[in-house]
Image 1 (tube, rainbow, N blue to C red):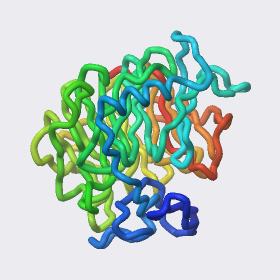
Image 2: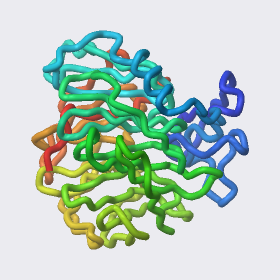
Image 3: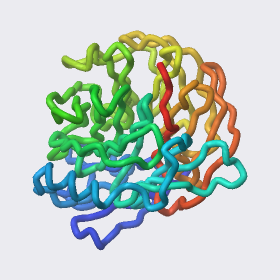
Amino acid sequence: MERIFLMKISDASKYILGIVAAAGILAGCSGSQAGMAPSSGMNPSTIRGAGHGKAVNVVPDSLLAKARAAFHGGIVPASKNLKGIYGSEFEGTNIYGYRGSDKKNNSYKCAVEGVDSVNDIATDKEGDLMVPDAFDGLEVYSGPGMCGKLLGTITDSYGQAADAASLDAATGTIVVGNIFDEDDAPASITVCTLKGGCTANLTNSNIYELAGVAIDKNGDCWGDAVNEDDEATLTYFAGCTGSGEATTGFENSSYGGLDIDKDGNLVSVDLDGDSVYVYSGCNPTCKLVSGPLTLHGESVFGHLDKRSSKFIAGDFAAGALDVYNYTSKSLTYEYSITSGLSASLEVEGAAFNPASKQ
């Protein structure tokens, strides 16, 4: 199956449009070799957004946070009590907030504007929104309502942020998944807090290019990645520390987003397989609960709602957010949201507000 990918090169006003046979959807490597894959052997067709070459931000964090706080905040005001769905596009500049129950009239109710190069988005159990910027780090917006104020910005000096996860983003640990590290180094998971910044970077030889990251209520975390041979891997870090362990029993054919349901099961998107797998354990032995569960469209990221009864995925082929009924044994397509979204801008991020309660 052919998929279109878009690569920015060193001049941000220029683009290279290509058609590849592999699923190159994530934001990829640095701008040291414009439009090229890292020299360590990854097939260029597996990298989306390679060679962006965006300048490093040297504005002091305190001034940057104040500027963003003044700029952000929602282009359409929303009720503080609004609960629903967030969606984002990699090539877009807004994150849209939708009322999740509006199946027929799914126009967005609010938006956070001014974002850039966002792969996945995520929320925590309080409804705080985490926005990984591939080249600037991580922004956190307040819940429990939608499109809240900017709580702060975390500079990720280790790599290109593509995903994030936290049980309490305002005060607790946030793990940031870097699709690649600086200077085309293999991917990693960065451990941060909003107050203290990023203090540790977790790497493992099984992690070459990373998509999804997850953290559980015990403080353990996982990275969903491919190794240098483009084989899908899931790596477990007890306490989000140390060198990690390769899990066993992981059956995905490719990488994708991660989430954790109310029963503590890992829910893993398989990009190439257009499917979802559900596992228990994975510390480091995985037991397959169900899967592959077929997705309606082509997705790389997805998240559960508070009760783990719904799952939403960004459908980049259709330019939509696909909503499913979820149990640990089944995934049933229900409806799609398209308002404000475009397939040409590559819809990737999708999350419920608030997130799954583990």
